[in-house]
Length: 173
Image (tube, rainbow, N blue to C red; front, side, top):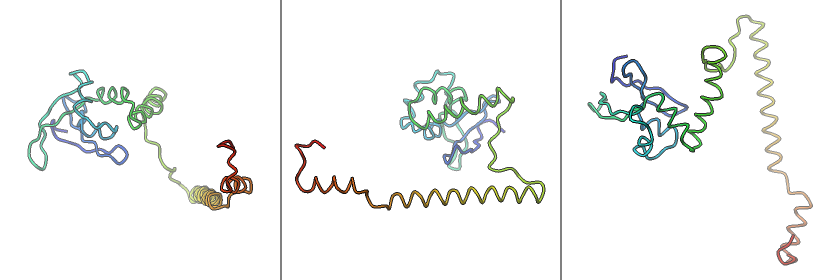
């Protein structure tokens, strides 16, 4: 990819623009901060060493624009130094899934939703498993609905009646 040409990726549902500088990926700082839930981009960038951040002019539909970009190590440092839940979730994903997978297998692969059957028998077996999962989810949903719609038990009803009747015992239950 040519330098200073943006490429779009998604992290979850958030767009993240990247560009290549000297063969390495750099990430648009505003996009990374948005993913991590960091509101003040300038303050977030000030916490990074100079070598992890740059300003670049990129071509956009509106013409050339200056953007702040963060190196890959800068993204990891920004995430690991933040206490925002989304940044912590990213750090946990990298440290609990990506890095162990690379250490164990030499690569990281996104988990696949379901295996692709190669025979009709495998397809029938997978469909059976899928149907069982659907039925189990429906059963659990039905149970939760019944639980939430069930009337309060007698003990709770009696306690409510006692409180409504004025026998509060000076606030003690």
